[in-house]
Amino acid sequence: MWMEQHARETGATPTGPVQQLRNWERSTVLQQPTQRGLLYYKAAPAPLAHEGPLLRWLSERFPGEVTTVVAIDELRGGFLMQDLEAVPLHETGDVARYEQVVHRYGEMQRAFIKDLPDIPRYASAGLAERVDGLLSRLPELPAPLGPQEIERLRALGAQLKSLCDQLAACGIPDTLEHGDFWPTNVALRDEQAVFFDFSDATVTHPFFSLRLFLAEMDSFLPHQPDARERIVKAYLSAWEGVTTPEMLFRTYQLSRPRAAFHAALLYVERILPALEAKWEMQNMAVWALHDLLRELETLA
Image (tube, rainbow, N blue to C red):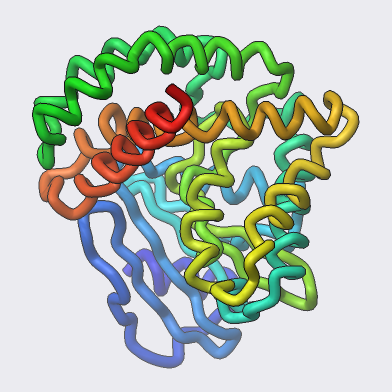
């Protein structure tokens, strides 16, 4: 099979059978033991199949800091990758490690501003123009919002457009946005952060990445009451010099409702249409919309 053939071509002789670790609409993941360690194969639907080429592009610029791709399977939209051989970030329980990770991630984002990858783009300057389109599709979602929630979101449409325009005017350039930046998608190897699972990546406002990272972080650092503040500060410090510290923090605040809007847009426009079993991921769109509604009503 393709996986075994390409493992052998890299000098990694298989030592056991291939095991299927995951199989759902978003992806298929297989594991192949070899005498040089574990290899993994991942394939995804067409809208998410840019991950392998993107990882290879990233590893050329930051070797050792992202998943190492062994081979690309263009026919099936998949790729073969090496085992990370790293410690998952969420297992450290150390807020200082989280600060290290987000700061490094911000530095990498800055490095890509003038060297953008060939992946889907959701330009900050044009997001206000997509508000009406998303709001008009709310009743069609596989797991739709309630009528009152739809009405409340539509009533806040003008406010959302204004926030989009304000964010675009803050002066932070668009760059790579991971799209799935949970703490569980980062590991540490020899004290260095290793980033993986870039299937949802786009080029858009960089600060959108903090939404998922902070949402999951609370469950891993329950006894760190200042963790959120420290992590936001560590991330924004990677952007020092682009604008003033005060404007950086204001930009982050403006980005919060927009991050939820971007996530909803990503699922409604790209991810859900590519899935037959939409129930597997439909709640992610609804969660993003609930987040968006909460953020907008807090500001109203």
